[in-house]
Image (tube, rainbow, N blue to C red; front, side):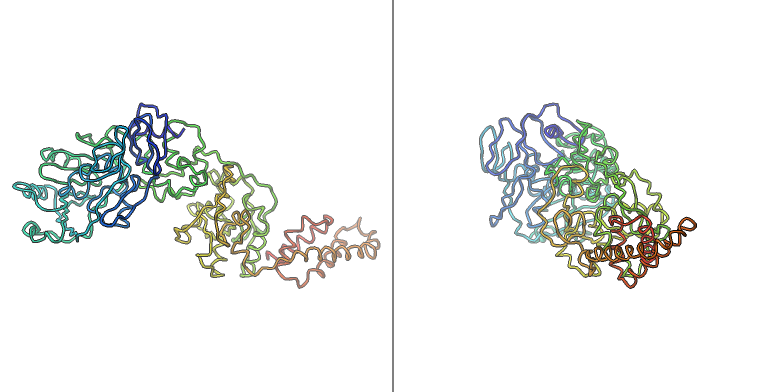
Amino acid sequence: MHNKFYRILKPTKIGNVEVKNVIKYSEGSSMLPNAVPRYEYFRGSEGENVVDFIDYRGIDDLGDKLKIKAGTKWREVLEKYKVEFWSNMDFTVGGSVYFNDPIIGFNEFGKINGRVEVDAYLDGKYYSGRYKGGIVINVYLKKEDKEIIYKRLDGELSELIPIIKSWYASRIPVFREVSLVKKGMESYILISYPKIREVLLQKLLNGFYDEISPVVEQLEYEYWYLGYSSLSDLENIINLMKESQLSVIRFRKDEIAFSIYSNRLLESIGNTLEYSTTEGEGLFNGCILCGKCVSVCPYGEQTNDIFHTPLGFYSISYFEKENDLANCHMCGLCEQVCPVRLDITKELRKVTKINQIPPKNLLRSIKSDLNSVLIITSLSEELEDQIIKSLIYLLKKGKRLGIFYLAEDFSKIVKDESSLEELLKFKEIYTITPEEYFYLQRLKKKTVVDIYNLQLLAMNDLKINKDNLHIPCLLRNELNESNFTCSSVFLNILNNKDNINRTIEKKITLCPLTARELNIKTPIDLLEINLDQNYINNFFKKLEIATKDLREDIEEDLGWYKDIDDRIIDEVYSTLIDGIIKGENIENLVLLYFKLNSMNLTENIKVILMDKLTKIIFS
């Protein structure tokens, strides 16, 4: 299935050649015969054999220059180092050399493939030195050792173009970069140069003002058109530029390099590089194959497969409609990084085949006529210890609330197939798990309701240091945290991939499902709530002795009354039970309430005791 992905040459084109072999390149890997490289998800070359460099990333500092592995993105380079030139932040360094991308610094350095030294593979042989074609393995870039000045001049395109043309009329100005930029509604000339050249350029800088940095190009548009042309073709390119969201035209004597980005299809122009999206509409429902979702997707991490991500869902579904690539928990991390803002989870929900999580009916709703409730679902109903402690925690805080048991398949809530109409009457909802908290947020689109996660409330009360805490992905936004980890426990419930992340070293987690699986604590567990299991046994013994005495001493005497009014015996039992539970603390009473059904008591005593405990706990 995955080999089919490598037939994708760009978001608008599928190759005709069947891909037979794919190897993931690592240091010292052997090359396949007649192979073509793959440096990025969004562009490739056609061939039966593919060498994938996407994960071959890293930078070696060699002093005055850098050795950069071919799959390293320009963004990664510029986060740590200053170099003389670069290209689109989402392009890889190896890809830029192989495809000959336009670079910042074009006026001084020209085209990248004639400027850099590489380790490469050509015609069956490895070579090192100036690039002369073939598969790029490593690229050597000089560090920038000069102070670079950036300046800009704003104006209409019709005013700016003559200025640039006048510079090149007689000679090449000694700028490093001369760009004509159109970004949104603004247009300007952007120039850069080493500060030591300022005296040579002073006469050309009238009206310019300081700019902090060059324009940032990255993949955040549906269509892109990059290439080279002669200065004589400038007018045609300017016409396209006017229709785009972002365009950069770079000048060098009588040649121009253009990078045009748009969210709608533009007329095709000549001299574009092969990966430009000139064929028409995209083939993958708006996905531009940037791959940004791959690095954040918990499903991809769970399966250790980049194609069990939205990238795989959008691309592989083009070839195979039936697959398991949508069987995730719809966490929405992909949507937060998607540059073209696709409604990814909506599309995933249409085709997902996640497992059902049917209710076991272990609980019932209590006092659900109150405005505040603790919600229990088919996901949390077996977390009895967490339920009991959570209820005690809220009661001790003086909260008057009921319990609402949402007796429906939790997978329907994940897939947004549940109306949740039963919950619209509540003003405050308390949840035990991150999953319940996350998926019930959609209630806020229908009604005014406050939704709380009890683990977060307890965390704040206990002032737990987040450094000691496992933060699940579904609570990331509540803590404004990038340091979160998906344990895959809930994912495993949904898709049976049987690959739980057991490398979590934290001793406390905000996820009760993870706590149960990895045998660690939640904030609720750390509260000073003592559940005395011995109390249940002691209570049962006291009740057993008392009821035995009652049967022997009183019930026989009242037997003649039973056929006339059964309530008289129940009232006697009620008085007896009052004496046993009088003065008990709330922890014991709540514990007794939840253990009642498992106790070997007569039905009438259970009913009496349940009624008394309900009044005490939920009044």
